[in-house]
Amino acid sequence: MTWSMSSEHLQLLIAGYVLGDLDPDEAAEFERHLMEHPAIAAEVSQMQKALELSYAPEVEPPAHLRSAILSAAHEQLSVSNTPLAAVKRPSRQFSWSRAMNVAAAVAIVALGINNYRLWQTLQASQAETQRLAALTYSLQGTKAGNGASAIVVVNPNNLEAVLTVKNLPPLPPGKVYVLWTVLKQDAPFTTDSKSAILTEVFTVDSQGNISQTIVVPKAFRSQGLVSNVAVTVEDAASPQQHQGAPVMITNL
Image 1: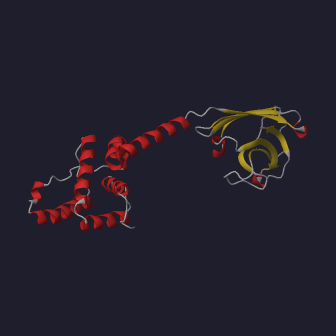
Image 2 (image 1 turned 30 degrees about the horizontal axis):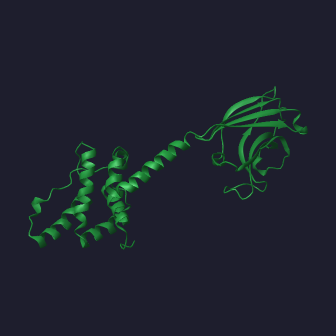
Image 3 (image 1 turned 180 degrees about the vertical axis):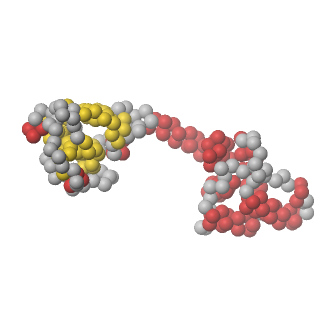
């Protein structure tokens, strides 16, 4: 790790250090940097104080944080002839489980007001993602499907869907139906040789019907990537082989 960095990057490292989010190597490197540059101890203390104001219950700070700050402060104050006892020690330590309660304070101290606004924009964007409209795919039986039909209603927010099938002929033992998500060429997802993702393996009841909740690929969150949704008949032992012709399909 190099310490030739921007002030913003340094503030991020200070925040991660105070919150205990740095890995052991990063923490050790930061402590060495803290010893070499005692002035940073004041910034660490400022971050600690901001967290103290945001979370009241007292707990002991981690040993590495207390010793590093005090050592750096002692070195700096020895030069200025200021008594070490005059420096207020950080008195609280915060884990990431508590950091969510002080995210705004950390963002303001560590990133500055401009980056805090960027953080707010990101949160708004994520909230907007959670309001994606449901997607409905209607499948019609091909000649082999004997007039069967299906509807797949996808919730892109939680990547769950309801698959409802009607009039699909029951299969003999050893055979299953497979629902495929077919993507456009060059879509940034792993597909088989037919540009498809195996989405669900299912069977139908004696009347050829089924309704169940399934999990769908993340491709449904991106407009324009899904080119078709189809159903084929495959061997139960290896449905991923994708050897069967579609018995139901929708053209988008």
